[in-house]
Image (spheres, rainbow, N blue to C red):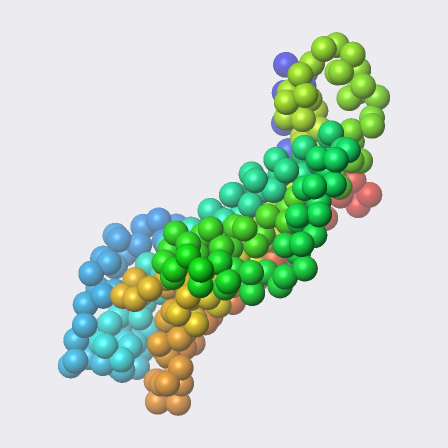
Amino acid sequence: MESKRKKQSQLREVWRRLKKDKTAMVGLFIIIVFALAVIFAEQISPFHNAIRQSGEHRLQPPSADFIFGTDAFGRDIFTRVLHGGRISLSIGFVTASASLLIGGLLGAMAGFYGGWGDEVIMRIMDTLMSIPSILLSLAIVAALGANMTNLLIAITVASIPAFTRLVRASVLTVVEQDFIEAARACGTSDFRIICKHILPNAIGPIIVQTTASVSGMILAAAALSFIGMGVQPPQPEWGAMLSEAREFIRTAPHMLVFPGFAIILSALSFNLIGDGLRDALDPRLKD
């Protein structure tokens, strides 16, 4: 009970300090708006409006009927941005979670056990990190085929090394502490020590990295879709929408502006939240 109250007080303290960071709260507000919009996207504007073509309404500028205008096929850009957000944000959250799970497990094992296992895991991670993440993702998608599932796999694999190195470094700062030795002396299993004692004490940098990485994964997915190696038409996705708008950048710039603005705003918001969490979780910055 005492431990639970302590955790609750720590969370309240983090939230109090995070609320004082105005830029982080702006980022959080924008992400909440985005999340609500994509959750209720079907109620706001049904999906069939995103794929329904109309020669009569093609390339219309923003108006009362089409607030974001229409594209070259007469499709409503507002609806496409709305439903494309479901895909882009889902990619960010799913790949960040998967990378954290796999990379966190590998990093925790490497840091906790050390020895030859640590060497093998970290040399593999070093090899993967020697390849730029976007090129590694591109190579994986090119090998497996361009679709949503392979895009998720590619971005996850490219992001695992960063999480592995971070978690390993965080574990190494905790694993030699006296309370870990005490847990070992009491016969606590290694799995329980890692999950109950090590990771909770190293969670701060991990949370910050996970939050900040979501923006990078959204940008990576948009980049791959932009060159035709990600989400395939007619499914709306922000990067693919930018690709379709290239040839109309002079005649119909609204096709480019709105999905581009959505990418920039979502990525910026996650970065702002990540910076705010970094400051809120840093014990050296307590006020």
